[in-house]
Image (cartoon, rainbow, N blue to C red):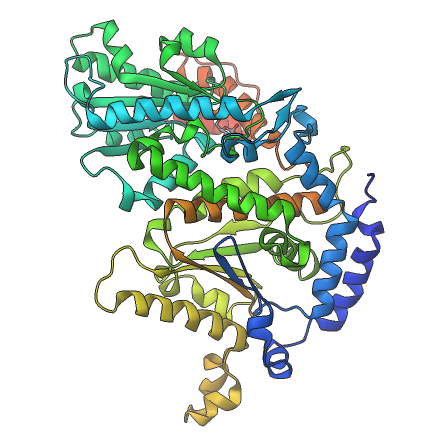
Length: 545
Ligand code: F6P
């Protein structure tokens, strides 16, 4: 189905008009008019409760947003993804991360072949390997058991593994140490191996391409570190290095036996890969059964996304609300605020997922967009954020829609902590939505001059996402929720959410500059005057002259 340019879709024009009508409407009024709003504008599906009632929307807004999704061909795009069509058009690739969590026995066809058996074959190999390492059956070069696992990767080959490890630490093997190296800044590696015994350390080199500068630099440094700790016996690498990649040739070239390589496929984007073999460190930490439970959580939300009508579809609604604020209210950002300490890396993970996916300036057919695309996602766990940036959300001049994420049960019940934590979630969304009027402030006996400082306008929108408990399945559900919200937004903007050409220029320029920094002889510089001067200054400063 061909989709009209965004501004030509009837729902788009209707939403523009509708926005003019409702933009000043207060959440206070909306709640006063409809006593059921708080339960009516809430959905429970796949074990996730989404309260979206504290958004600046009416039933008409929702109807128009759903109409926009329909006119944007969202249903066809979803079907095309699950069918294995090459919807990543600029790279001519299918987008099948949903196959990574399809149950054994399911069928998802790519290039005429069912990929699900391959997916499970890799999962089974990962499970066997993970069991061997966790039980001590896999021994290091000197016969010691592996106690430390270091994942070397960057972007999607790092953020998912770190986030999942932190999120699921409660389920992890505490007798083992897990660390993650991503930055080409040598400090990252130096700190990661602090106090570790090479004889007990396993490196997982995770890189889809196995060519990424940061990862390959760190992998070489890791090999040097390992060998220098193990009498420089080259054969030692075999027991201390495994690879996760799609590039067997490069893995072999690096010196890792491809028998110790766990593969995935070009239809898995880096930022959509934490549930592929890229999750090997996660599986080593939490064990194969928990990893499989996580995949089941992903799959439950995939099925919900694929089948639920748009008006009852959690990721679709979240995506549509993001569009509403981004394109009609001009909001530039979305804050993600997990009230769960274990999710401390979740906002960082979402930044790659959302911004590498939807930070695009042309449509699928290469025409410049004349509307804003991907908003900036950011956030920190509550309640810490409340004592830092929430001031701006409550009383600043910008509109910042927020996603509050919370769990009904804590994994660490300690006295009254959890009730206090959840009280803060509910208090914040209430304060943001309803604020405090001048009258209320005055009634508290506040002197007149102080009233403007102490009043809260309210009308700040938020979603509240509530789940039972942070289990591996719950984590899978949350990640899939955001993956498909990103998909929904990309489908409406008609952009390619699965390429990332924007990272290429910087990479290429860095390759050109590296020798200019390292050459002993003064290089001939042909950059702009600023870059030339910075390179010269750095050369001088590092030389200490
Ligand atoms: O940042 C660009 C990018 O290609 C990401 O999309 C990807 O997750 C990351 O680099 C790492 O790539 P690789 O897994 O190939 O090392």
